Image 1 (cartoon, rainbow, N blue to C red):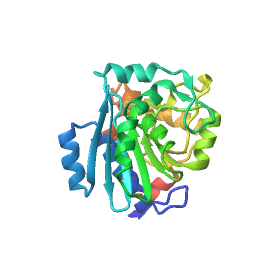
Image 2 (cartoon, one colour; image 1 turned 30 degrees about the vertical axis):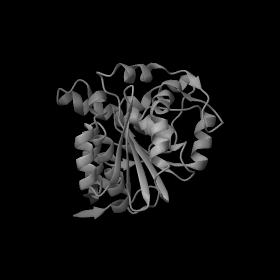
Image 3 (cartoon, one colour; image 1 turned 90 degrees about the horizontal axis):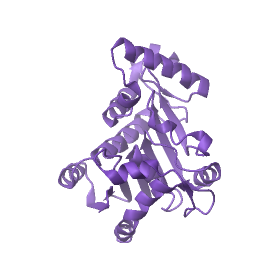
Image 4 (cartoon, helix red, strand yellow; image 1 turned 120 degrees about the vertical axis):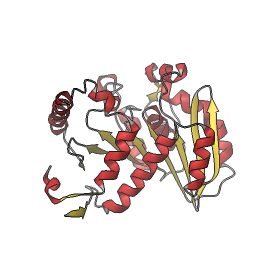
Length: 265
């Protein structure tokens, strides 16, 4: 028998998961060409859809009712600037004033921020959301920190963005729901020894397709289980496979309902 899940943070899963899935779909859609994005977003009820693009840094803005959404495009292997941004892991100052952030990710947001600010200045809204996958997740986090306090960010397979003091300041002002799919390797970089940390609340998707909080030890055991399951299927690049945005969407969609026996897994 199927039952509605309840998340660890005491939110009805049906509402939360549908919202998380919606922003996951927008994050995936951000990889599409402008014409495709605008057509699909319009079909989803969004208006004032705008494409931002400067030197390979790309995002979409859209509005609906009393809120706006900024969806950021993730890394594209053919884009040199994307690869350069990922590798430029120097700490730099930022708009929050405390702590430091990843220079490459910040520069990507800087490139299109003037366009975004111009678009936002023409909108009337009560709530703002940002979302993105991979590099887009990092950009959505930094963009969130530049928007009004209380802005909500959903990201998927995002790398670490800032130093501990920056993360603390961010968490005091904004809400971030961070989804990580089993062996996805991208959330593990830049390395913690480089003084980078994750912001927000972690929603870890384990090998059973369940979403829960998990200690470092629990995640390690689950990752080994994931590697073993992948090896049995002759899937040699599980860490890359788990990073795919379509995989995130399927896992989050399937999480809305599940068998009672899955509750304990």
